[in-house]
Length: 329
Image (cartoon, rainbow, N blue to C red; front, top):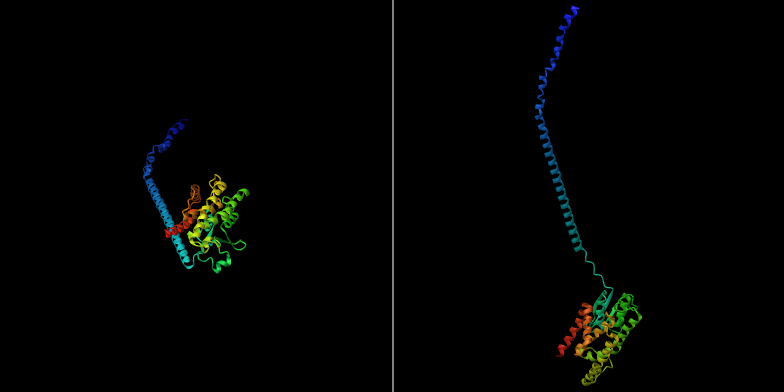
């Protein structure tokens, strides 16, 4: 038993190796923590990457701008080239001829018959090529188309003879063709009144107006008229005065019957009969006729209602009358 007792205590020294725990100073060698400064290069690397990214973005932007500028320059160059090409082509080939109006209107500008249709065409906004045929109505070329040698004359496709004269017939025809109900009503009763006013004017009033004014205007009177005869000036003067005095009656008929309190023969708006009447009344100024106030107001209302469609062609008649009166003075 003593043997075993003395042996066991001697074996304890083997626990000394646990001194490894005391050897912890090796752990102190953790200077690796102090080695953290090596992480700094990572920041430097990030900054470099950021710088590189910025540089890359800048380069891309610069490239995009350069590309856009190049594209824009290319477009401008292409547009300039196109303009130059078109300009060159325009020089080489002649410009297209202007479209020819479908209708030709031959007129004598100082005439009230012609004035009526000239006003009408403008008021209706019709496309017409207006030709002044003064001095050529007796030419072979004109007579071949119009043996009556009268104006105004309309020429267009669709007419049985290709031409049409007489102011009232022209206005009626064109109103029907283009559906101009405001100028020539479709209602049979209203249209009949417009027709009646026009026929009364050309059959009764206009012959009186011609006798009273044509001699003063220098227009040729119709055969058989006193003014166109070999009678002396005294006879001609009396005939002119008689016709002038007779104008009062048809004028009063227009006021009391055809207008009857309305501003126009057509009612609230002018009709083709109003255009024909107003144009006729323009000639009264050449003989210094005592035009009734209602007639003056009526003409002013017509001009206001139709505007330039009335005033522009009427200026030709008024200008001619002023010229005739200045020569007489």
